[in-house]
Image (cartoon, rainbow, N blue to C red; front, side):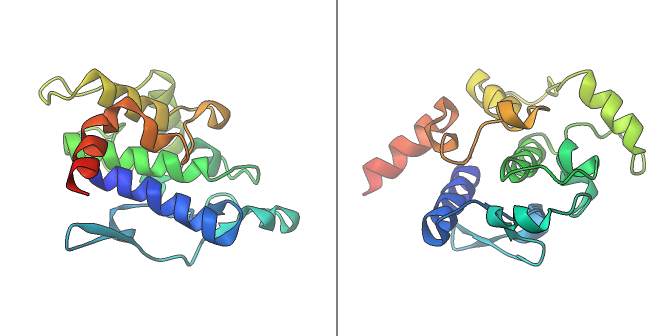
Length: 172
């Protein structure tokens, strides 16, 4: 949970530094590096500031398993919440050892199969126990409708991070 919180705070710092919304567009485990307990966000090769909207965004970039529905559709109208989706897939994978809509032994699912599974809703593996707050956090990150998806500013205040925030405050 701490790494997900660090990722949210990293995006807040990017927004504060650049004065606008930064869209990484390829959040995945390979691009979130761990160094001495801290994450380092890497590979900004596909990143765009939201001001790039004037020159149209390109859909369908990134890594298939971590792409938001908006990116999979090849759309040009998406926000940094597309990165929240990717971070939600990563959090699910870290906690449950599999990506949300994967099936054991299956190769990359066709996009239509993936959409069909997404439409049936998010299912949490019962063999791994996580709090209801954590399930709510993941669900809010993997909200199909981008407008309803949680944003980077709201993420650190989510109740799932209560204990992480409490520990961080007590350590300072």
